[in-house]
Structures are given as C-alpha cells and as structure tokens.
Image (cartoon, rainbow, N blue to C red; front, side, top):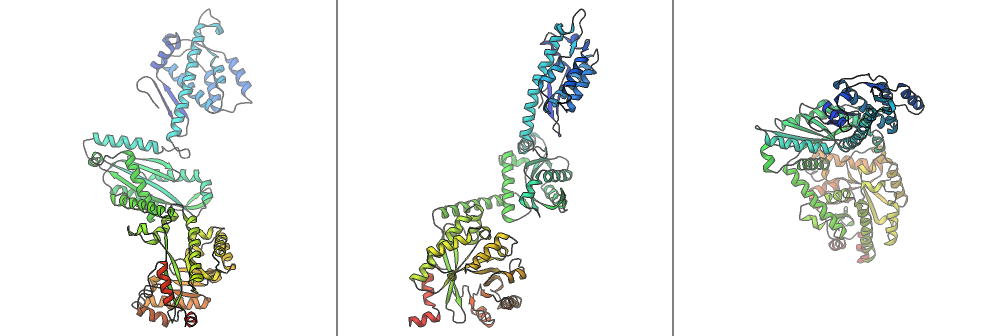
Length: 600
C-alpha cells in the first residue's frame, strides 16, 4: 500500500514484517494538528528512563518479544535533541518496532505507557504537566492509532493477495499484472506479446495424506526451483496448492514458452527429497499467449487468458499430456466434451441409457453360450461418441456408484427374463469398473439383486480389467475373494493389454480369460498375432483357466481359432451387439445341443 507525494508508504516484506515510512513534511503536518511546530519536534527531549525500566522489569516475565525489547532500547537511547531529518528517522524506526511488537502480541497499552516516558523539555515546566509534552504524546498516540489501523489493512491486503505457504502473489495479483500488461501493450509502439503459463504438479510415490502433510515444504521447494528457471521479465504466482502461474511481459514469440516449458520439465526430472521423503513432482505445463494486434480484435482480458489456461489444463488432464498450448481447436474439443457430459448426465437422469447384448458362441457347434452386456447411450450416438467414453464421463461427473447399481439391477432383471421367461440356459457377462472393486458394498449389491431376480451366481460372469485385479489393494483383494466365495465367476477382460503379474494371476480366483480383439482380428494375416494368441492359449491351459476369444470377424480367423482348440468365441462374424429382443431371437436361433434336443 502506498500513497503518492509526501504522505505514507506501507508494505509487508517477504518475511511478513511490517514496514512503514512517513516523510518529514507529513510528520510536520500531523504535528501541527497538535499545536506543535518544527521547532518543537526538533527541539529538546527528555526521557523518563526510570519509568521505562520499571515498566520493562514488570514485563520481563510476561513478554519475550524482540521488537518490544528493541523499542525500549530506542526510547532509552533517545537523544536530548534531534534535527528534522534525525527526528523523522527516529519516529519511523519506533513506529515499525511498535507495529511489529503489537503484531507479536504486545498489548497496545504497553506501547502507550512507554510513549508517555518521552517528553519535550520546556524551561520552568514540570515534566508531567508540560503542555507541549502532552501534545507531543498525543501526536505519538495518533501515530500509534493510525499505523496500527494501516498495519491491519496492509496485512489483510497482503493475506488476500499472497499465498500463505510460499508468500508468492496469488491469482488476484496475477490478474492485476495481466491487466497492466495488456494495457501497456496497447499503449506501446512496437510489437508486444504477453505469455501466460500454468504449471501444475502430480506427485508420484506418495499417498494423498502424505502429500497433504508435506504440502508447505512441497510448495516452497517447487516455487524455489521454478523461480530459478524464470527468464528476465517473467513473474511467478501461486494459483492454488501445487499450481503456479508465470506471466511473461515481452515474449519474442511463442517458441520462448516452449523453451521455458521444456526447461521446467527438465528441472523436475530429478528426485526431490522433502522432509526425508523421496518423491517425484511431475509438472503439467499449459500455455497461452496474445499478440498486440489480437488484444483488441479478440477483446482479450486477464480473465479470458486465465480461462484459456484452464481449458488447456483440462485438455492436458483429459488426454494425459504434460504440455498443452492453448488453441481454438482445444477450445472446441473441450466444448464438445462438455456437451457430451451434459448429454450423458441427461440420459442417466432420465433413464435413457440402454443395454445391448453381443452373443458369445460355443465351439465347435456355434451355439449361444451367453452374451456380453454392453452400454449404449442413444443421445451421444449422433455425436459419434464411442460407448467406452460414456463410462469415462459417468466416472468423471461422479455418477459411477449410481451407474453400477443401475447396471447390476438391469442386468439381473434381463437375465431373469432370458432364463425364466424365454427358457434360455445362458449366462450374461458385464464389466465392473476398477472403482467398484474398492467398494466394500459390492458383494452385498450383487447378492441382493440376484436374490430379487431369482438368479444363481452361475448366471452371471463378472468382468474385471487387468489393472483392476492386479492393483495392490486390500479392499480389492478382499472383494474378489468374497465374490468367488459367493460362487460368482470372474473373467479377466482385455488380457494382454495391461500390466499383468502372472504370479498374481495364478493365485487369483479367475475362471475366464478374455483375449483382447486387438490380438485376434488379424491372426490370419499376422504370424506375430497368431503366436501371441497361441501362447495365451497355452498359458491359460497351464493355469487351468477357460478362454474366450474376442474379435472373430471372418471365417479364416474362426478356422484358426478352432485349430487352437478354443471353446468360446465372440465377434462380428457371429453377430454385432444387439438390442435385447433381437438377441433373444438370435439365441433361440442358435440353441445349445441339449436344449435343441429337448425342443425336438
């Protein structure tokens, strides 16, 4: 905080000490309000040292405040006479001491009592009844009142505009800076490009609780490392926990942003040691910039630049990239994503999600063994959205647990209809989300729904991804073991695409391994894919696991699969995913031998 001319300047230093400075002219103006002139305030002074020492001795056991001690020393060393310059310097010094003493919990009454020990010398006047002394003390009292109020205002302003952990200026200050830069750019003669960079961090090797405990040390360390990398004309701000912003006033071109991003990423390739904990801080760098001729054309503001950074960060997190430069293409992609999210939420809330069924065939007779239950969202089909994205959106918007309850209940209801109304001895498979395996209520949800719809555990197969089953997590392991104990069969989906541990796979209660279609589609044309599928077949046999082959799309592929002695297959050669009624017709048209004999 500051005022122009000969008034007062107040700042808070990086270590949060308060500093204030009055000019000599301003002090004289204030003194005149108390009937004091230049001769008075630069005249002769008297100090009641015994009283100061008495007050100090009484406080010795109560106060341990270095600012107060320094304040007392200055009072005791007050010269008998001071010129105008010396007086101004002395007053500013004691002001800063009493302000910081009060900030360290010294009561203001103590400051006032000590101030009463300083007086103006007047011949033939007793100290305590000296009118000039009383006026002088009132003058000092007014300074105490004014400076403490100014201190509180400055401290509040500092708190509102700086981060509590790093003391870096925050988003408010960054917006002020950007606004200043934009206005300066418009007034400048030459080309003027302004850059804004956001650097957010993901922390590896630490739990969220540890990250929270180390938050202050982490932020300070990260801020220090970034600060050392900044070029001239760049300023650093803290937007939130482990998210920083950099404003560059005079960019030569956007390549400079790329170079700075690379420099920051290289700095954080090192392992950091924070409070004896080793960790890696992975920077996610997002950038935007605006050239002078675009400021008016696109009506660029500080807020719009900040919004662009937010869009770039959202894109980085969605696409799992560590560097994103904002562009209109990215803006359009994020807007499309938001539209998709709205459509999915609307479809879920209005019960417009539906289930399709892709047949699973037995070999060699190609009869219907069951079907995989697949989600479809009609509202997003027109947007060309892959069904897998619908699940991602459901998880992102926080509807995951509600969706799982809906999926389990809907699948059980339709399984009941297939088995008890259409008399089809088949099973249904459906995917559990990774998050479902962490939910201790999962076994209860399944058994409750199975009981409601009069089903046996053998009527369903629960599909789990590799990453889901192989994650080191006690809840996951407990849930899987409980499901197996309840009689549910578990299938490992998309085998070969994750990060399998064969030792854990052998020990887990997995009944079925599904070979991902990416290995199957081209086996008639790729010896490598054929050998991979063959190897998985041998591995599954050695582990005593059944295998389902996905992605069988033509007769050549089917013949090779039959030659490898697989018993369960799925793919467009047999059928695409079908609505429920069409699947019922398909299943009845491809009956199992036992059922066909019974019908005959």
